[in-house]
Length: 347
Ligand code: TRP
Image (cartoon, rainbow, N blue to C red; front, side):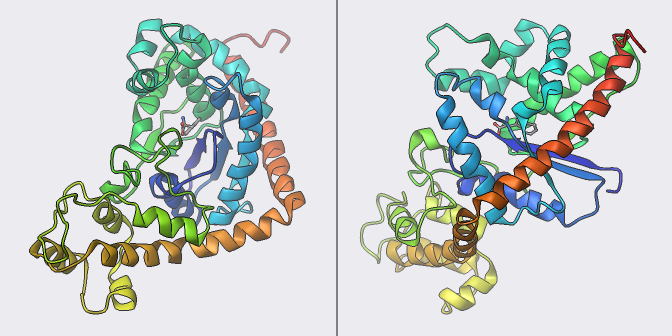
């Protein structure tokens, strides 16, 4: 791990939710306590602007929310360099050269871009900046020489595209860049945490999120609204587990200790599943159980966030310090890459 350089990031388009937490924040918290050479967490505002260019205010506000969420979750600025993407001019510069190494049809075939295009309503007028954001993401990763990238599964096509660019760059300009590897959550159920409606993944635009900053009452209401088994009407009816969001969440969040604390009549999730399928366990019961578990996770985050909100000077200091450090690294590394490309004319 000593030679590992870790880089990851989020687009600042709103507060972070439970999907972010299990999909990547949790892994970052684990990784920051292990041995590594360097770890960066980037707030990807330039990338967020590629589909929010008409709403820069939203991005600006979200940077504040995201840094608060990071620190409240326990991302440790003593160990991790947190920075803002647009403050690193070399990233833009680098992206420009990378654009030569990618074809338009390859970008159009990128599965992540494709599914995002399907969701958004660009009406066949796709902004070039949006289509090219995978190229800028390749720049994010390689400029900092990152070889480990903790992300959600939806980001794997981005890493594949990055590595293609790396290979192309190296074949043209000599071995300079390193390939990267994604790091996924341990629990497969965390790959795509569904929203509370169970329809698809948790997503701000679908309004089905539990935010890390939601208050207790809101979390309670959202859990009580969760999609379960529509045919499980009476407590005595047998219930279905498949597609039942409460159980999907329990797979991700419930530990055996939680049963001791909050549901002592059962030992573990296996027993609860069997009891539910047999009939005799009500939805309110499983929802209250899940609520207790989520509250145990969210309460300390909420308290820490409140403290930080009262100390915004410190929060911005963390961002400034991280950004300054990233700027220095970017400047140094850029020299190397320019040399490889033979565009270091005055040296
Ligand atoms: N595309 C990522 C997302 O939507 C954010 C991101 C930008 C990123 N640059 C990155 C993630 C580099 C990992 C590495 O969440």
